Amino acid sequence: MYIVVFYLLVVNFLNSGFRLLKAVKDWYRIPLYHIGLTPKPIISLRHGPKLLYVPGLFSLEQFLDQPYRRLNVSGRVVLDVGAYIGDSALYFWSRGAKWVYAFEPYPYLYEIARENLKINMVNNITLFNQAVGSEDGFINVDTKYVPKAKSHARDFGSGIPIRVRAFDSLVNEMGLKDAVLKMDCEGCEYNALINASESTLKSFSEIILEYHYQGYAKLAHKLLDNGFALEFLDQTGSHIDVPLQKLGLIYCKKTTD
Image (tube, rainbow, N blue to C red; front, side, top):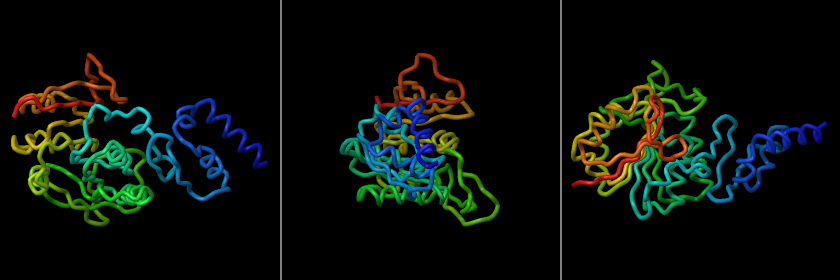
């Protein structure tokens, strides 16, 4: 019975999961886990770090599509807003970032991210169980809440208090200069960036952000007004001539001081 189930799972992966087979050295651990023969596995990527396999949250897009490949992070400090399971922070680490400050508000995702950093014995990524917005404050978050995917930080009305850091004061406190900013926080980019001061934005020479339901226009105007050249990308980080309306990436490079 186990052999049949294992065979069917392998066939399914071969048919629809070629990307997984291409990217993961020990891909066979995943079907073994799903039929109950192994504990939750640690997966080794062929061209990247190791990641804890968590069904529904395991993601390879950072290391296959490499949507942030335009960023020159080598030897530079990266501010990663929306760390998810730590995959983007580990991607920047693998590309030679000097230091990564990563922010993830949801405790469940934060714990997975922390485990992924531990697995890779990383010592130049600082992970915060905090949110980023336009103002300092707190939100209450249910520790048992498991996001189905990346989601914006919201107040549950009960749970544990999670600190919200004002983007301006956070950047000032860290003393960032010629840094790189990545934002994928499911909507927080609007309040944080649109209300950011000129001096805050001057701290970054490159920015990549994912825009969501409010579109790209306000973000684009803010960044253009502060001396950034913009390039619109799809979800894989590939150039597109016409920006997507509701979900896409903007790559920004500083052109003026």
